[in-house]
Image (cartoon, rainbow, N blue to C red):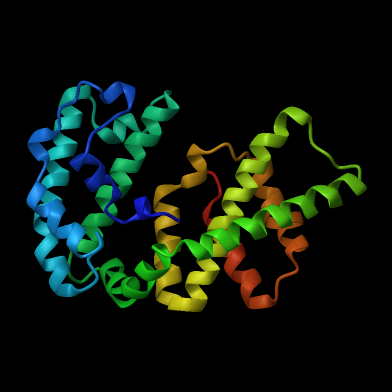
Length: 249
């Protein structure tokens, strides 16, 4: 999990420059607010208090609305429509923007469950998100367990075609890292932080835009999970992440 995983990553991206090919001619410079960018940088990019949300949400929402309207006018499509495009890159971008807009709206709206959970856990979550060590540790574990999984499958004569191995490895390694980090977040920051992260995973449907197949997800939830030999609570934490990552149609 990197700094770019800030809950405000899309807004910050708009404050910089859009590089996707089909957006090359979309000029969002009118949506930039350099004073806001400087203030966000001063607090470490992520608001952690009610006061900070009240201060930063209005200009963030204004900039986000401006960017969305500008992009939609530029490409001649509503972003919800774009998210259903046959062009996977375009669809992923459209879905990501819509999901980000909805997430930030929920965080910025007083009285929502997301805002309540966000405020109760973000100070701790932010420290973990910005600490590279948990993800380094989870990455090492992911490779070790995947190697063990491949060995186990080879012994059973259950190997997959060579041409599918790279995409399967990418899928399982990525999902394990997510699950491992989510479990670390639960242990360090508590249930609210964990539930908030799972909610975000579900909103962004990360595997819908990845190389994961239905078979990969099925194996993750069965053979791979069994191989991990986790104690009951940790198995439940991992299982919830695996379930949240199932592909949507």
